[in-house]
Image (cartoon, rainbow, N blue to C red; front, side, top):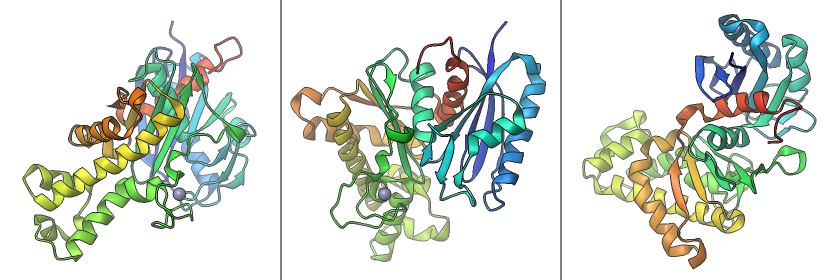
Length: 319
Ligand SMILES: [Zn+2]
């Protein structure tokens, strides 16, 4: 009989939950809109409700534990949410202890970028590798690193906040309060902001007709239809991603860089630009490192969180 774990991916807009077996297969998946303004009690109630529904699907005794991926920074050694900007009330909040009390299950807690890296490493694009960097490019940018066959966690378990490496001195303001971060230039939010600036600069572009509905998908679609301004925006995005990924390649020497998050749905349109930046700008010995899309799509986090609960049992390998 299979062993199961429940993975939770707690985000600022959605909370996703999945019943996952030891081979990384999702048996059932649920999601609902996060009640982000309502405070921890309500959000933990949402997690508990989803967990109970999944537990009843397989028999409570078969569930090894609960793995929770949440936006950082989290001190995963102490199990505390230090400050989650997108969720009200999660400042210095003992998330792991409160969940264990409610659910009477072992709970593992992980920063979301690291959880997604674990998902891709154990069951996705990084299967069998000893060194990889995972980068999620979405509203913000996060990441996680597998180095020498182990999860790189760093002090307090907070390693891998790759979105906040500085790429431009005194550059654009980032959501973290600093200036010039990779996230402020390469996230999906930054990409659409640049598109709006081009439109406002009265450049001749079909994007001007879209108005408030403009999002990253509309820019990619316009580029596909031959709009030169949209094509330039896509090329620029690929170059900025390539620049950040090249730094990560130099620092961690991964076998691959895995790109996940919302923007990775357009990976085919970004790949050539990203890869050519790596081939031009990395030191020669690093130029053969490939950038690939996440194999688990938006499930990397939920599967990684479940993997933690399955594999972090005392007798299992140390992730
Ligand atoms: Zn930042």
